[in-house]
Image (cartoon, rainbow over all chains, first blue to last red; front, side, top):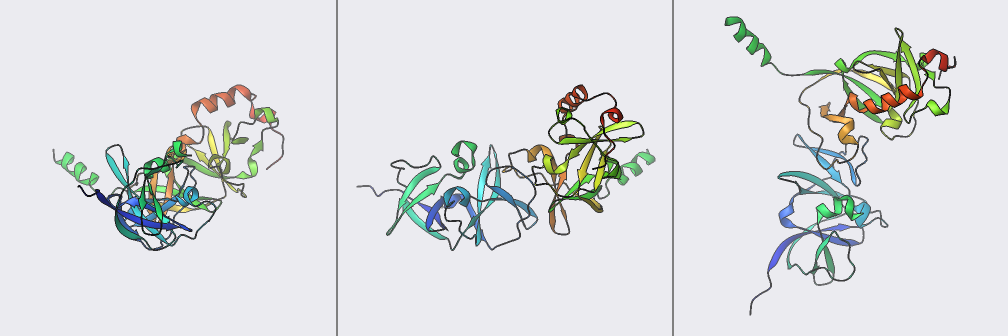
Length: 141
Length: 172
């Protein structure tokens, strides 16, 4: 009998729900910071943070994941995005404390959005694991 | 030989670029000083008479030294709500003037930071990159983005040859 393969995920709240990202894609949880804004028309990219001299785009995924809730954004989850062979940090505003957990990634079932790469069955909740690239892409609209 | 070495040394100094900081709405932008020939008030600006001559973000012209400049409204260009404009940046490389709210000051900028790849929209064309000024992130605009050569040719075709004859003597 073989044990199910588990992986690490970072759980983050957005309004009343929690979502997850693979821990390998998250580098840190950052405190609230000044968001520098300038005109742009990329969906969900609302500005940039300046952290240790690095310009980090703010990707406000709550616009899609928790649109009706309009949660307040308390912290920034700094995640890695891949652009061909290059990586870039992205700051994802979240509405509360995050949690690291290990769990088996279950395949998405039912009618879930294309950006849901799998599900985590936790004690009291089922959490959607987000594919950040699909969520940020135009096709996910 | 010696002169060449001296020349090389001189090039190793810190590379800075003079820019003009300007405001549109609540945002501050930078443009390379070399891209601007002069700054004008909007008082001499003349509206294009007919709606059919208006082309998206160009609703006015201004004539300087016998040359007609198309006035690009920065609010429309950057898809911002209208704000009161008071200044025109006359561009060096094309017959264009950019209507902005106000000029802040001149500044020297260092390294131009690339726009993060997460930005995928029109801003990739609007900006040459970002710069840091007084701990603020300021986009450095791309002067070539205000009006394409195609847009300019279309304007030339649809508008009368002489701006003076088409414009009414009303200041905006």
